[in-house]
Amino acid sequence: AAAQGVAAGRVCLGEPQLWAAAAGSGCAVAVAHPNIALIKYWGKRDEEWVLPAADSLSLTLDVFPTTTGVRLAPQAAGDRVLLGGQEATGPAQARVADFLHLVRELAGRREPAVVDSRNTVPTGAGLASSASGFAALAVAAAAAYGLAADPAALSRLARRGSGSACRSLFGGFAQWHAALDAGGGAAADRVSLAEPVPAAAGLEVALVIVVVNAGPKAVSSRAAMRRTVATSPLYRPWVASSVQDLTQMRAALAAGDLNAVGEITERNALGMHATMLAARPAVRYLAPASLTALDAVLALRERGLAAYATMDAGPNVKVLCAAGQASQVAAALREAVPQASVVVARPGPGARLVAGDGR
Ligand code: ADP
Ligand code: DP6
Ligand code: CO
Image 1 (cartoon, rainbow, N blue to C red):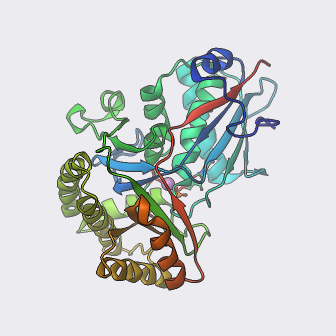
Image 2 (image 1 turned 90 degrees about the vertical axis):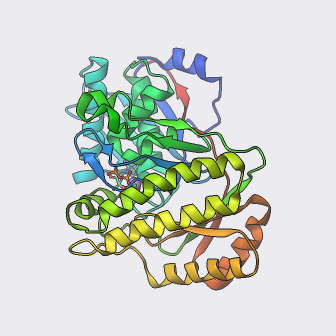
Image 3 (image 1 turned 60 degrees about the horizontal axis):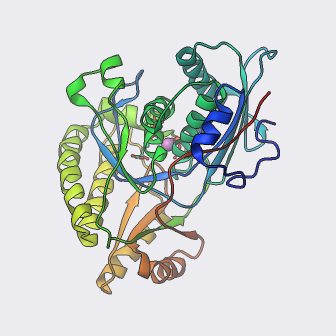
């Protein structure tokens, strides 16, 4: 297996040396963490290039890393993909193979590869496995195929695998530029990437993750946003309000105003779910336990705690709060939703190469 013998984070020689060692050598291993959007990406203006309808802004987490190894296999008939130790088939294999095809085109190479990827986050559950997954794959595949790439170029590349993945190249808060001014196609491709967003030094946040169902969603994020864009009468108004939310979010982060950050986060997410509920047919990710968690967040606010919810394409709830109150918030959520597993996350690092060796 490609990642054989390499434990995540164990090999750490410093990035420049690693890049030099791994470049074009045929084998590389990368780690990336999921990110959760405070201002959501929901809907593409260009499916082929994965260009979004609007900017989004996220927090990269320090939990649930994905480790991905890529090893070139010149003798193989085609790309082999292992996800969680199991041979991937169908759309999951095809999505990785399509991505490798793109990397090969950019690098001017032809050899197939073996990809061995392990998520620690539940896959397809609305906990951003496609973000950590394609961020790690972008970093590992670029190194294995000898594609010279800085974090900005890797962010653009990761975007082609899954839009949200472009933000996991960076730690902490990151903004993905929609690059509407650049139009579409190849011109926008060059400038649609994520960048770190500065926040006030005093803003110490945590994200309490309430896993009510770790199972895979019935409708993928990709299909759900496609249907929303095509059929929801609420979609365009939400995009317009999201543009304003983003401007206000930048100001709230710069000011270190946790209550403002939380209010904007919660309304942006609930608005996104409204667009899906109005799609035809409706896409509904909210489950009864999700609503129980949302009620618990309201109750926390009534007790005077700064706690605000966000949700992605799945039933799981993430609660933004002050780092110093995270254990209190987690305890309240465990009590309110006893069947859930509750994990406290803090801001985490960007994607990085952890190993590369010769063939
Ligand atoms: P999520 O909420 O988990 O991001 P998505 O619907 O966006 O759900 O994407 C899930 C899909 O992403 C999976 O079905 C698989 O095709 C792909 N994926 C998830 N993890 C990985 C990984 N580590 N490597 C490659 N592809 C992955
Ligand atoms: C609700 O990035 O998973 O989590 O680009 O089609 O792979 P594709 O979709 P994906 O969508 C994420 C949607 C979201 C919001 C967000 O992460 O911004
Ligand atoms: Co996803």
